[in-house]
Length: 311
Image (cartoon, rainbow, N blue to C red; front, side, top):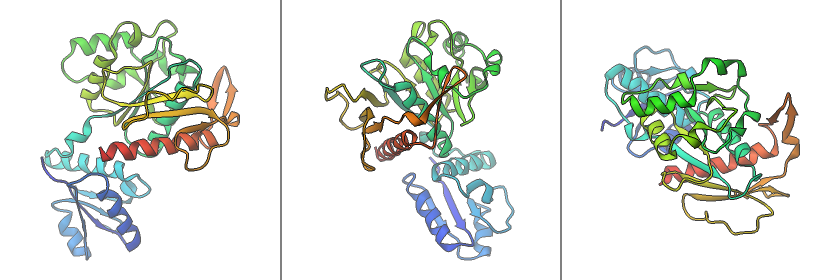
């Protein structure tokens, strides 16, 4: 597997150092270099990816619009993609397999769907690549939280067609045919008014395995009732009144208590009872992405991301 080399040459030294640290922490084996002069930067840009805010030319040069105010994970992916497009050499292929988060509860009304939708939005908004929310439960209740254009549903192929194609088409699928994207950049399959075909007509493992094979998504958030046969982070959402200790308190398994009262800033296992963050509008529920609830979900997602990258 080829090693990715990234050279940094920016006007602000402190920003350059921070950028180098952020990129170096993403994955072992990435070579991060600092160019000492514009000449050295120009030479580096001929053989490796060059991140620079000075005037530079070359097919491996990334300008400020491609890396400034971007998450390190997103910059790294774009650099690998640019390198492949120009050289035909594939790098970081082992990272193409999506991270899967299975989110579930042992009781109804615990807030699984609202957490899954909010976490998906946060992952997308913070530059973590293509994010998919997928429901594997009996009913597609996520449509009440959806913020995509319902008019687009008529233009999207059904889940039943996806199931047929994934079983009968060995080559890559054109996933965009089956997906709707909301205003936060999260992808969804078209919700069904009847029983969810992914619940009734297919196995969870075969759906998730095929989606990972497509290598289109960085994170797949699964709204489920529990699917032990898949390799994923297990996130159990529990109502605060459920006093059972839960089964998911070991590495890679998380117990999150919802509808908690006051929670401390460093509590990463609780979500507040934040009614102000939820509002009814046109038979839907709008979740504020700036309230206490979203902030608590953000902290949980950051914790899981950090732990997964260390595994």
